[in-house]
Image (tube, rainbow, N blue to C red; front, side):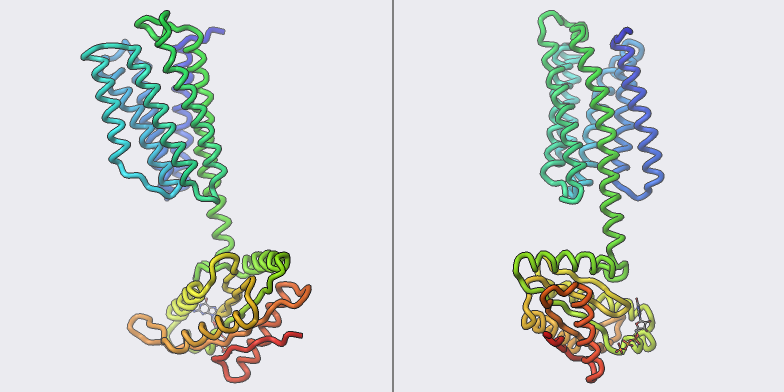
Length: 386
Ligand SMILES: Nc1nc2c(ncn2[C@@H]2O[C@H](COP(=O)(O)OP(=O)(O)OP(=O)(O)O)[C@@H](O)[C@H]2O)c(=O)[nH]1
């Protein structure tokens, strides 16, 4: 088998083209994922650059050298923009464009002013290492915890890419290479093969990042109450059980509130269902404001019923938070489209007894809540501690 440079260039081009087609299809299917737009644009522009580089001696030099190199480095800038967006640290154009401009100027200088292929090869490798290092910094420094694994894998692949370019940068320095850096023989062939392998791994790492992000979003959506943004019933039970377990292990108390709006049917009947929805969101916001940092669990347990789990909180502390919530809601009418909607709430409070399950604590808080309802509503009642 003959592994010559033109053959490897064609293989590289075909891989790149395949990635363009694959990622463009993915972008069409996952409409609305902005990072994919950056990455797909980067892949197409990079592929155009590879085509132009491959047409050396068949098209004018200004196309196969200058435009081709600028195009390839622009593709790296677009990839970086996508990565920055993916990790939630959008990057301004100014610095990437300055690197593109600096590299382009040097490339043009060593093509037309003092032509030197060896310097151009070193420059190309150096700027590729710079892009890799910049992108790795974003991936490792800013990746949110929930998508960190795929970002770390992508960073590792980029480090491999940087290493292969660093090695390639040393090849023209070999005295045997003369003005024809590509005459360096098998070492340059090895870097081309490595480039193709790392490139393919790089495409998969982009796919991995997109997949992990989608999985995280899917899990979050499955756990969320779509109206209020709090946890839904299933997630409250799931997280509540875990939170109770952790509190027990740490020898801490665990208290729980069940909050139910009073005469909520009347809110719907009087002001309309949209106003009812807005009122539920208003209560959710209020609950969120009162939540302590850390392990607390808050969710919508039923139609107009909310549950708040408070690990480390005693009955006394939980009751005083419940009283603040009740008073705040009763004292400040909810403003909705110029209307003022008065609302009150009844709250049951319970603290975990020895060995009691999460659901059993909810049931005890629920009993206290119904006592509050039967006593006239707008009240906080503590569950019996026996
Ligand atoms: N707007 C809106 N209303 C809801 C939602 N879920 C449940 N409800 C309404 O909440 C009301 C609950 O009514 P009831 O169970 O009679 O309770 P209530 O009127 O609050 O009376 P008490 O709890 O006894 O004070 C019903 O009218 C439901 O239609 C929702 O997501 N949005």
